[in-house]
Image 1 (cartoon, helix red, strand yellow):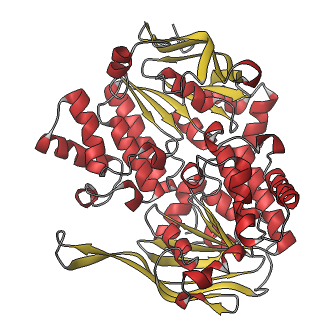
Image 2: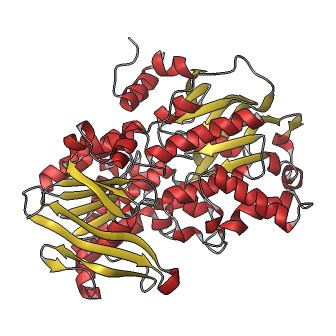
Image 3: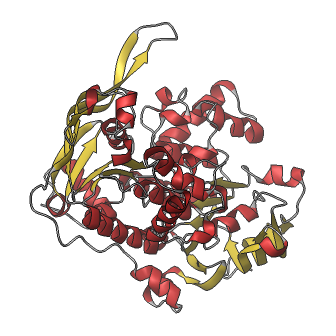
Length: 540
């Protein structure tokens, strides 16, 4: 029996996970014991790198063996041993009885296949569905997870979707075969607050209708409190506390649990009045993507990702950009940096860069940087952390010696809470949160004037999130950095931003000083976003 007094569907005992062997062995999980009852939701929480995802991947045996191995432990699913099980057993379980929503959808979706083909593959393998029946089921699933115009999205490839849309496709794939157990690794990380509420409601509905069990891995304690029956808290590979959810929140026993519950970005108290000087200004920014009739057909319409946006970011100030997934937030950031084609006028300092060619832009790249939403997709798997962070220095600061570059990299890593022991390791050896900190260090090492931050804290647990917000504030004050901060986490946006732009379907719905937008929104759409984020009634 599980600790919940329900029959145990999943029973993990004394599980240890190590990477490498001999003197290079790193113990990621240490003697973990955990159970999930039938129909129960169990949350696994803890800091970045605490071993949460490694535990989940062990259940369905997806760790890279023999590099990863289990010095001890047992994993029973419905009484059947999964640890060391053969391919036929695992094939029958994976995707059918146990499904998993992965943390980084861009690396989990095949870039060469359409959305329809990827979901259809699972339906054909486990349910024998094909043709019209499979297409109907795919449309039903995409609609369930909140993909608008689902029929038009069937032929889309992963790179044509926003981060939040890719996450919803991953959820649709995981739910396709109505599994008995769902392992959800940060399932709402890339989702805006309104879609997050819909997804959580959907998961609850499926749980009740199918009697589905849920192992939920997340750093969002609001999601944990709303969804979980019981909570396991992990620190440095060990379970330090486990109890019913309400007990964890009302009377946490372990000092680490108490630390997690208290960690939240503090509000921004000092906001500079007016502008110091403009770093980047965009006027009437348009990014339209043509929709063609067939392969040789003409343009039938346009997807207006950005449709006439005006934006200005000044030195020492932060402009937050919020809105639903697919509203055009990231497109705006990429357009301002001239990383995608756009119409309109863009001025960076004294340069009218909207007419600059690639060569002219190259000279300015050192002064404008970006931190991408998906750190695993933006960090080269073939380069060490030292090579990744120093690459910009090699390109833009050719006068530096090797020792000077090394020192700059070490300082940048220290600024984001990492030390020089990681210099010769590779991105796949780190957790999602650690990879995001490496990506931030890569941007900071050049000490740019403008940083576009695209969901820079979405993969981070609450305690590290608060640290990163404090770090970004400190660096902004020290170097008078201008930030364009793109996020769906409105608590973090409020903590960091001086102004907020609210976007919907490529247009600005509302724009103003941050505190006014949060506490006194004028538009119904903004009120809906704020209410969902802060769980309170905002405005009249």
